[in-house]
Length: 317
Image 1 (cartoon, rainbow, N blue to C red):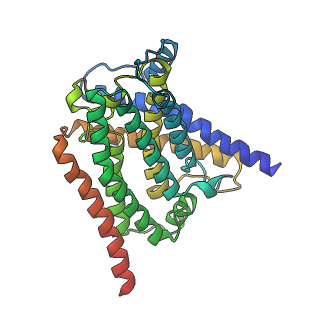
Image 2 (image 1 turned 120 degrees about the vertical axis):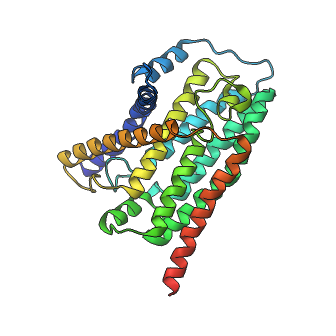
Image 3 (image 1 turned 180 degrees about the vertical axis):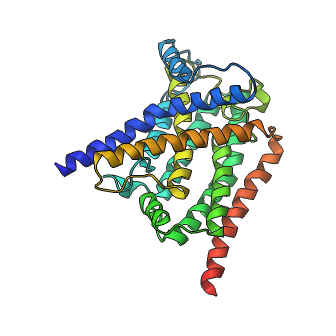
């Protein structure tokens, strides 16, 4: 009976991230339009867009290979698994032992790998430009993410997200290394989700696009699956920041229905706050030039490295 309950809770988390991802994307668009004094689309518009794309016919290039057809599903599967491994409303669920920071980093790296290959598969110039820029940014984003993982592992003594969240929850204290890791993770999240100042998700200029340039040849259900994966990725990073640095409100393992309900409510509030802060930052800063992005990500790498070095120095003395 306990096993069945744990499996149901794990399945609930998987369905929760799947259902809230488009809602979070719609919420950010609605808030951004409101801050810009415009009438934006309704919050549920991403659901309508996905349904409309699912009904459309898929148009494929003549030279598209099997990789181009299968990449959207592999991207979506890897992103969904990574998002489901991040603790959302409870700590210590059935598969929490698989929620390792290194595993999540590897899954996100595989998503980037397949997306870049799909962008170059057809052989268009814009797809090649987007893929090359994606790999350029990844060469700095991934080392920065690894340094963040090292910092958290030195603080909590583990890389499992549930244990890290439980440690921060039970040993709440101000640490300079954690603050540096938080800033670095926010920078990486902006770059990985191609948000301002790295990229503008609402742009229509092909020469300035990164993520969108790799999707120009996709249509129909393939495009719907990739767009859904992009929404899941945004939710993943906000959930990751909330689980590591703000774990308060999460239900403990073995809690009752009321505890889990309060955990879900706290998680939704965290998503709303994270989405609002993201939009507030985007509306107060301009998009930087492509050649300035490595400097932006280099700052994240240096912050992660500095956080790790501070922990080594503090333990030495």
